[in-house]
Length: 100
Image 1 (cartoon, helix red, strand yellow):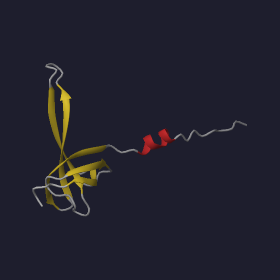
Image 2: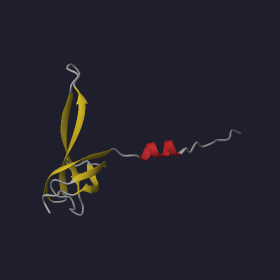
Image 3: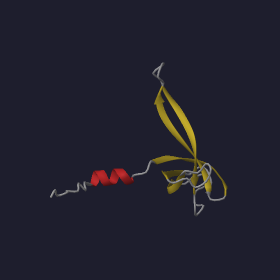
Image 4: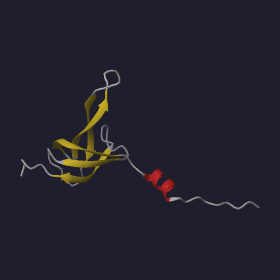
């Protein structure tokens, strides 16, 4: 009779339930419960070895409609919510100073 020992290390359990988290700036909040977040990355160009800014837009679900254009937000990956939405708003990090 073989005894099974479960390896419940915190790192293995956390890695299985972790979702990707990105930080970016809200570019549009005109849709119902949807925001568009632009995420900037710095990437080294493969040929010229110069650091280049690359931006990508993500559609995120904002249930309470708390994010406004210009805000810095944190979004987390989730199940597909609609055709384009695969992210949820986690928190608003900084408000846009010019909007207030």
